[in-house]
Image 1 (cartoon, helix red, strand yellow):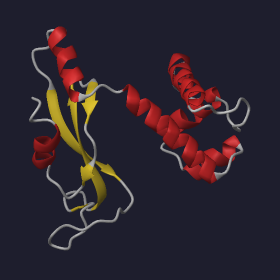
Image 2 (cartoon, rainbow, N blue to C red):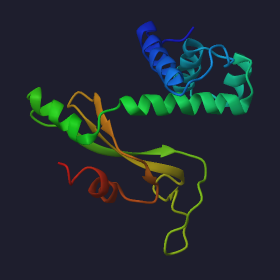
Image 3 (cartoon, helix red, strand yellow):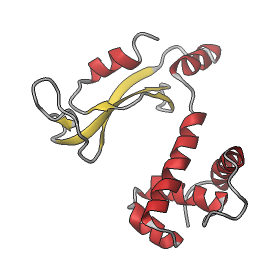
Image 4 (cartoon, helix red, strand yellow):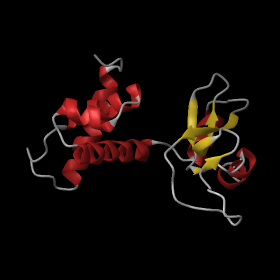
Length: 168
């Protein structure tokens, strides 16, 4: 059982099927159909599980699991509004204010050093490797927009100046 509403799975499955038609994937050439691929990806989001275990459960290889997962993530990302669209929607709805905040998301070590020779992705604040994202939310916490990721060593205000403050 996956505690995700069926319409969410169907939404992602429809977009996966449309993507497969767009790239001319032959019918029946994939191990998982669009619905099963959508379940696979949403299960990864809900359980924060390992791709190896999810792929084993779906009877596919780990490499195929990663490919299916990243394809679904890319398709979901294309559905997200950009910052200007989110702000325009808030303005149309008469929102008095929005909340801009940043957070660190755990990640594996990524290559890259800064000008001082320190690892860019290591966050001294969190004491582990992380990526810094900025997000815009309604006052009740509903997310409206998320920035691209920056290395975890960068301060929230620096990241906000790059991604959000010019538009705000």
